[in-house]
Image (cartoon, rainbow, N blue to C red; front, side, top):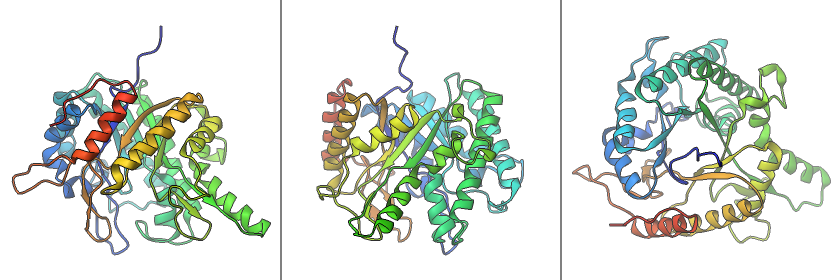
Length: 377
């Protein structure tokens, strides 16, 4: 008998839950900025009505633990209960780019406090639900290492310390996995990392090697989690559970150059990238984030789904595709309206509208993946 699917739906809804501080020190809170923190139950019901019965959402650590070891779950409990009432399954991010202000990310205390926070979060989830919990301990360790540790664009705002920051985030993720398993041995873990491709047409072998080394760096965090690299961090093969692949139109570029557009002769098919990832790790894969803006939304979903089907025909076990962000949202740097979602920002009556063209493409793809049709209003 085949194992029951891990997820309630193949297509998933991802709610932007970034909480980092920008270069200028301003704290972002995208769950609040999109109104999702207030409208969570309606948002979940809307997703379920569209066939997205698994969601990816987040705990805002900086709101929950304002003082060491003192947890205020008032921002979380309504979300857990809303998911139960809406009959949707949640994957919970525990650290989505941000952490409490009093905590030094470089210190051993960061690892210890994150582990204790993760254990407390697992106890809360277990007290509210009998379902197998799924957590993403630290989202996009590679991105945070680059943006926060290498170029100073987000917290902690340093330069030239990307490798050090990546190792610290891996330590924290490993400690969180161990702490959660002490509370709930059945817990599952998603490790979401960007999938990238870097092309080089230089005549210099050294430049081409540098481009390839940069490309291969996308695997460093997962290699550390699995104990294949930097074993002193404590990684083990069983720490690597569900491999999350985050993929956007900007994820391929020329070495030290511009973004490669879809259709460029140097653009690598996404199916090949998925095949490489599965060959490397042998673990189930989730497209943990994917999306595009405005009129590109539907065509991008069409492309990604075609590549996923090609990878699956080649034996890659892709378990789901998460539309991310599934709500329009204000841009991180300038607050501009980023139209990425199935649903709009709320209007003056706290109501959202459906982006019909995107919803119609989603329904076409759901049917192609064998999911039951839904009625689109």
